[in-house]
Image (cartoon, rainbow, N blue to C red; front, side, top):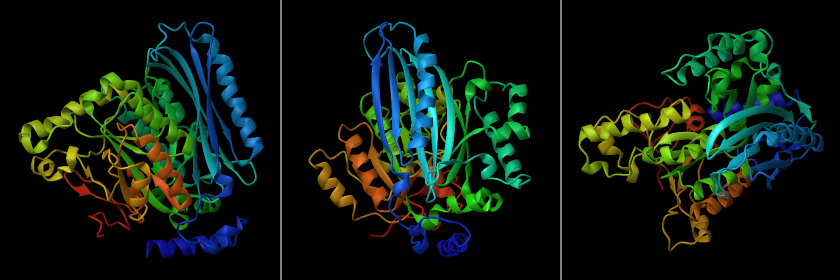
Length: 454
């Protein structure tokens, strides 16, 4: 029923706008639109003092958009590159500037881009600057927040409350700069916020250092479309109607981070314009803090895979509950927030529920079995392609050598098969499902979250 109503609204709106011919016969599961196709490449430059600049560039449907993004990235390179200190060693623990362009799509013509200039020294994030852009890719016209919400719309009050609440939720042991936060919450401050549009959410991006001194990660403020679409302009309403245009799926990765494979995975996700959900082990966070920060700052959801990969069936109730306590203690100093949900190692959710583990528990409905060494990527892809339905959650492991390449091939296939890839938060928000502690979720198809019948 939800999709039928959404389809009717989209057809009515299509009569009022000039949109691509493909939208005249709308069916959920449209392939990747031509105006949404992007080629993303990276190039490393080693400076005389041994520091490294990595610059990402995009080739999109619109040359003028490419030129503007290139100018933004080059400005960061020209300004920040000469300031890089001499590398302390010749390993990956060096002095680096990474200028990335994160991109995402929504609807049939809109795309968002977030230019991120991240400076690291010996893998410690020492600075981050951002600039966002959103365009109609068929016209090259820029889209502003004032094109999302009309002046006087209740959407601005929802935005103001979300920014205030989320900013204060970060770094719970520290006080925000109240003057800086108040400036963001003014009408002018809200209009000038950096934002991007995704499959099921509008996300506000705020450099944490502008509110919390000495912090260099991003504060990400999501507003999910079902909560704000009633207050959108007609054009924004149409361009966020992704449940009419596309099927949905969430990609998840367990057991990381891993220095080599998680890095490759993040690069592949950046290249394909995809956000995923990483179920990380708490005892891996300290030694891989830069990777966990990157996961968060590149828009992926960071979730708990417990503090250790132990068998909870062999733990006491106290030891199980301590998994969350220890995970939070490891995650909070790195990101400023902790996980909102968890996945139990080996999928042993009954024991977590019995012990009152204190987290919503996310399972899966499509298992790639990427850990089975005897299976080739071709065999895995052939098997899983037969399993997909709308609302699936896919299980993979970013610690496995084969998985980055496997995941990239799967992403490309899913996009052409008409799937919009969401984070776990988005997948459940699309149907208004509120995740509850000690409840297990396998998928989300029209609000159904139980095990999928095969």
